Image 1: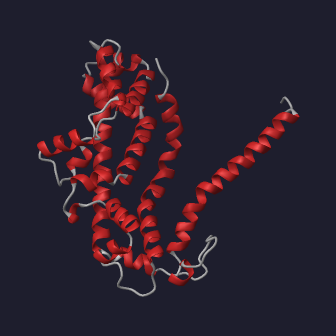
Image 2 (image 1 turned 60 degrees about the vertical axis):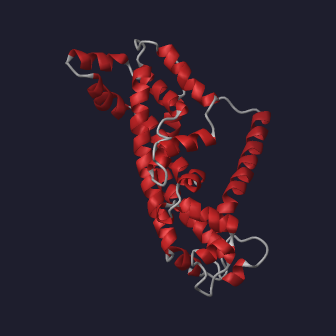
Length: 290
């Protein structure tokens, strides 16, 4: 093994120090929020660093989890995330597979139209009029249908399909397999890394999205958790009063907000470690151009 030079050792030490500082800056907001959510109202009001709660209290979680609107929003967000992710994977596979075939007629023109949508879009008002014209207002379809196809996801998955040897498909065609069978029996099982990557992107995007729910959903019984979180964090105590979040005594506005944020991010934190192992491989192979 070739020994490292003094310059390389200094660079590695500097690089490690910088990465540790960046990691601490990224992690501290999560630790702070978790600490505040587990603190009593007196402890939460204390100024300074909050790395762990001195007086542990679950009052804020009892208030938040006991609220009907929060529970309803949580279930609605889970349904939206699951439905939106499944539909996105299904439609992206259907779009990417033919584009990965080099003998597709007018393939270059179709790819140009896909890339065109990455640069230009109709904007919020035309989208609102379209959703209203289709009769999707106040339904979950207004949230999942417009996001089923993404040009970026199509390109990533198309490049991954292109990296799969065409001999697999040709052998299946000789045996009489249809294109539909080749896609779902051969290509999709081989594309687990990119499927996991696109699924993670889509799930996080659906779970964190709140603006479209604020625009298209008017009924609170169909509203998403992130919309309620936006009300609590941005509108503050007024929204809490409207949502009945002020019935217990051992709480404060800060602990309620922090507990809501922790509950909101928890599903993604639980799912991410199971998908992370496919993440790097999916991006690297999907990013290879022909």
